[in-house]
Image 1: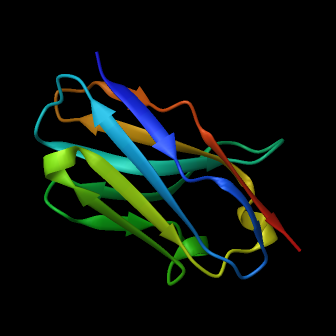
Image 2: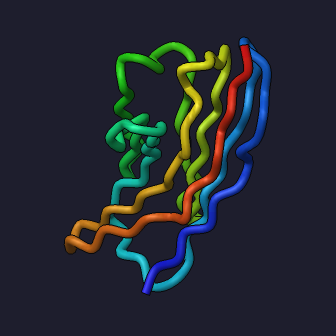
Length: 116
């Protein structure tokens, strides 16, 4: 069983920055993709950014140039540096781990609120 523990959410003003962290524990297949998704009230969960175990990244158009995803494979931890935050970034952010063998795991979510 895999456990994902997120941290770093909170309240920030328009234009501010936050850094999210997600630590994975358990028996994790070495080849995997870790990512961040978000869900705002009344909206569907959407991809924010993801990164493979090899370091390839992908971002939603809405966050390109503002957010940076990175990972530490030795610690099974993924980070999301969020700069120039906007009120529309307000959502619950979820960490995700997709292993090559098909297991898909989610964190409990962390709230990010950007005030205008």
